[in-house]
Length: 154
Image 1: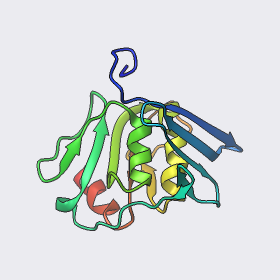
Image 2: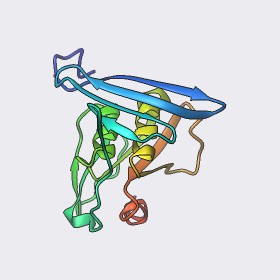
Image 3: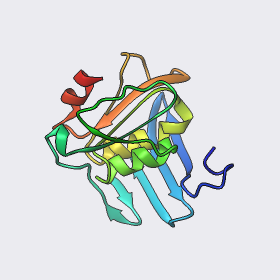
Image 4: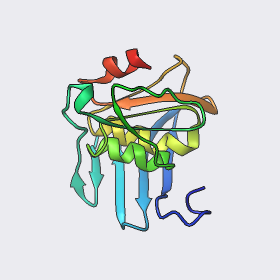
């Protein structure tokens, strides 16, 4: 939608799934010429440099991204809504954002971001205890220090 409306914040994303598991993913922002990619057990990278999730542990110091029509607005934390789930997850993986959640998102919009966050040391899970094989899912992605705190708020 961002691309169609001339908003220069969108990405091309590709994920490879094998035996019900995402084993590699790539997210490319052609406007900023930024490439994020990861491969299972080989780490996550931004333009050939290793990336890690943030190390923040206080929700009040964190910056979060969310999206979709159905989302929780939480007054205690700083939240952005960019309109590009793939880049939001890439930004969590690289420590730009501290966390991300989204309700009822298409799996293909976040598949590449899932492995990026995992390979950069983060946690990704469904909010409704569903599986990542469902077409529409509720997702949360963070670092290990704030994961439970944010999930409890949501």
